[in-house]
Image (cartoon, rainbow, N blue to C red; front, side):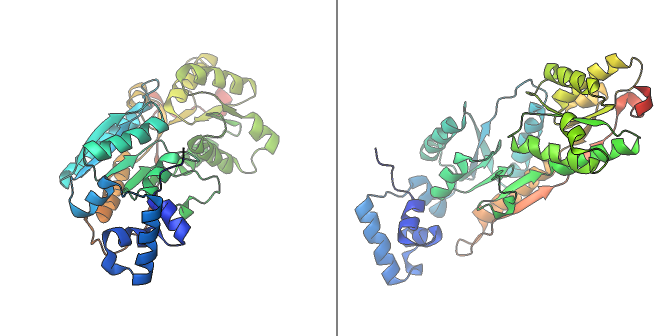
Length: 349
């Protein structure tokens, strides 16, 4: 079955930009006669039908944006997206927008929901989370000229997400774990382990890179390799990973999540009773706060504000002005707790 022609496929076949093809459909007075003729001929030949919702975006506005609710996993790290959604909703509401929430079991189901919501709920666009390499959702939306911003980089694998063709806002996880590792180095630790997720996760790999860059020349490459463990997210997995790191001589652990840090903390506490465990998590969840765990705090409220700013520029700006693609990388901060005492020094293990 042949795929249905899209704005992007028409533009590629004609050698034109999507904006030019879009103008030919929605504002033909802005397009040169010869170009307009070529576009119309291809539209007739291909059977292309403009997305009704996309056209409505230019003629009338619902001031309504779609947002997919992600699974919460163990319920610990899901608190971050809860905070983000609350801040996003609050900021959109301040500017006269509202949010339509929907659930989808995977990205394919999410894209099916896009089509249904655009047809039935008259949405102005979407906010996406859970971005990853090869994310088909962003391609789907760009091909149909539907406005959106992602909370998360595209993780293209090229190492330069600034080349991305759509707007995104993200938190610099590498900077966060680098700061955590530097702090532990300052406490006298050298064999600092990293407890993260299996390789291939853009977010996880980014956080691992911060740990590795801060250790620098303090350890040979072979030791760095031995002191990095990837496991599935969860407190039980964190405890097992920390046990392995202790066997390899780690005196402190930087974790990719608070779930992992919770398990690691219990393991280090058992190995040295009465000593505050030298463990730093990531996300600064309510669980970390309640249990006195150190963690790297994501500025999710600032991320929500930035996303709303970009969307307002796209949706409320003058239609004849091109909208710049915007990329914003926000810096997290280290929150030190450890039950009211200092992080353990290496000689106490």
